[in-house]
Image 1: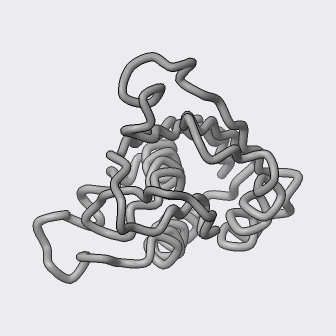
Image 2: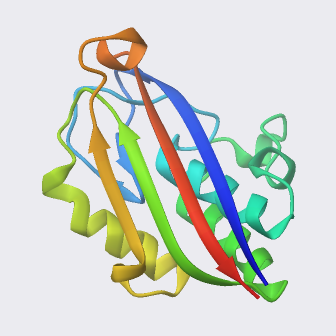
Length: 157
């Protein structure tokens, strides 16, 4: 059996927060505002994996109203989610992601992000791809006020 999962997340960008993407800290003037560490890409990946496996979503597994998830490390959340998905008999075939942000430019960090996600999911970096897009000066992303990530995965059982 194969299944496709789609995840999406959007966070405000604010001063005084670290900018994290796929578990990689990137130098930036602003970082993601979130209940956890705000890693928008990891959150989208978690939703894609859980959705493909039919195991809920990130809000069910890690409720934002629960104070124990305040400032949580998103990569640890990904590990927990992946253990749940993998434990249900699923194997990741591939993961493809799009990150929309006006800045910073993601290309210099792409391979490190791919490797970080691949290591957390127990696959080779060739099974993970990340693309960076801008908002072309439009909407909250284009104005540098927000960042969005989309992730699609293929799972096999």
